[in-house]
Image (cartoon, rainbow, N blue to C red; front, side):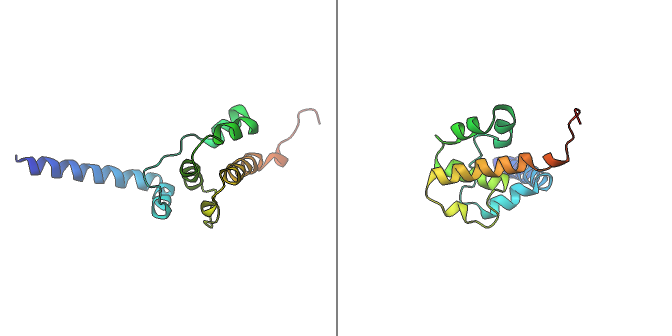
Amino acid sequence: MSELDKDTRRFVTFLRRLADYLEEYPHVARNLRKSRTIGLLPPLDPFKVYAEEGREKLEEKLSPLKLEQLKAILLEYGFDANGKVRKWKTKRRVVQHIVNSVESLMKKGDSFLFDDES
C-alpha cells in the first residue's frame, strides 16, 4: 500500500467520523456555518457554572475571557439567534448578556415547581 493510500484512508475515516458527529450534534453544524471562530471551543459550560456556583461566580469566570472566547460561548449555546450580540465590541455587555441568558433559561419553569410546605 502506498503512502497516498494510507493518507487517503485516514482522511476518509476522519470525514466519516465528522459527519457522524455533526448528525448527532446538529447545533454544532449550524454554529460552524455562522462562525468566524471555527475551531474555537467554549472554555466553559455556563450552565454548569451557574448551576454549581451561581450567578456571581459565572460572571467572575466569564470576565477575564477574551471577546473571541465569549463569542464562542454565544455560538455554542445559541445566545445570539439574530447575530446582534456578536457585533458588540464591549466584553462587559457580552458577559452580561450571557449571564442573563443563562439565568433566564435556568429559571424557566420554576413557577411550575411546588413547595412541600403548601
